[in-house]
Every structure is written in structure tokens, then in C-alpha cells.
Length: 131
Image (tube, rainbow, N blue to C red; front, side, top):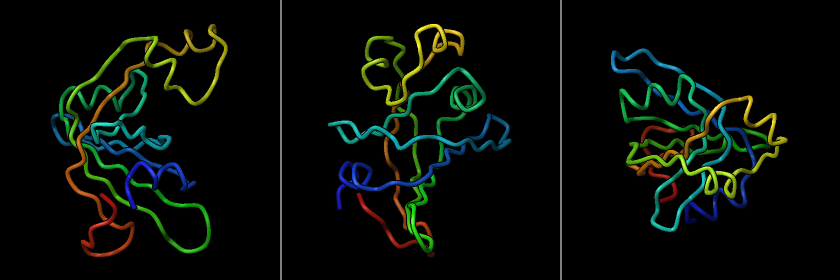
């Protein structure tokens, strides 16, 4: 299955893990990524610890656990390639709606793009997952 189709048809929970320049790790709940036409994956994020870590270290891992019985899902190994702060683009891509006042109060948003370096099944010792 293709990555875009996988995320369009799967429901579950995701965790994005990053590390700062000294290797201190953080993990945060994140929605499913946006799969772009060029194959990059993009996440909308605020200027918090995950975004700060990515300014120091471009590598991240995203773990997606599918809803349902058992342990199904994928692990994605990512490298940041660019980011965009265009508010109109971010507004179009935002899935969750807040009032403009609530959104502004939470601070600026960034659209951060990653290239997929490797994809593995959720459980296992290196079986390639979808690409």
C-alpha cells in the first residue's frame, strides 16, 4: 500500500520523537502526517520543544499505532528537509479548527517537511513497511 493511501484509510495515534543537538530525546503526540505529492511527509507544529529540537538535529522518528486489536502500525524514520511558515498554506492544511483568537493565542505554526529514510512495521526486526 502507498503511504498516502495508508494514512487516508488508517486511524490511530501517532508519536513524533526528536532529539536536540546533544541527544536529549523528546516524544510528543502528533496527528497523521500530510503526504505531499513529491513524497515528503509534513507535520504542522507550533514553536515548542519538537520544533526547537529539529532546528538542532534534523532527524526524527514517527510511530503510528493503528486503532483496533493487537499491535499494528508503522515506524517512520525521517529527516527534516525544509519548513514553511506561510499562514495561508498552513490554514488550508490544518485539520483541527480553533477560533482565530484561540489559534493565535497558541503561537505561530510551522509546516515542517521530512523525507522518508526508512519505513518499518510497528513490531518486528526490520521488515520494511509501506513506501
